[in-house]
Image (cartoon, rainbow, N blue to C red):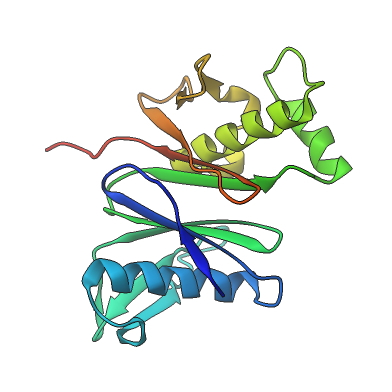
Length: 193
């Protein structure tokens, strides 16, 4: 599988890969291994990427990278849609969310987008999808998942900032779309001591 480096802000490295013959789980691990190895300056075979063990019912596991039996101090964030996967690697304290879609969603997905969108007019399908990708990236960065409804996310007019009113965190939104895939990266700020 070939991957493409995305144009991301400093401190975040991301790649896009697509191959319908490879399962989403294998795509995620392959791309993560490639990114972590590049970050560490080692060979991919020296990096092990595993899914952490669930801590309890409903816990969403994440990917953990290690080298020579020691966990690597990098956070791995992933998003997949159909045969495409985006993986980002960053500082573990940096809140990051990614979403990816293509320009031809299923009718059921369009209905869900229209139902939960805060757009006044949802007649422009590409604008609706772009809006939805931004909203989903903010939800992913927030980390509460389905406990927050998509219509609670607020975006500024330029779609470069997003937030959820009950939290004191604003996310910077970056469009890193590539090769026909609409991709948005949302990131917050590192905690300060």
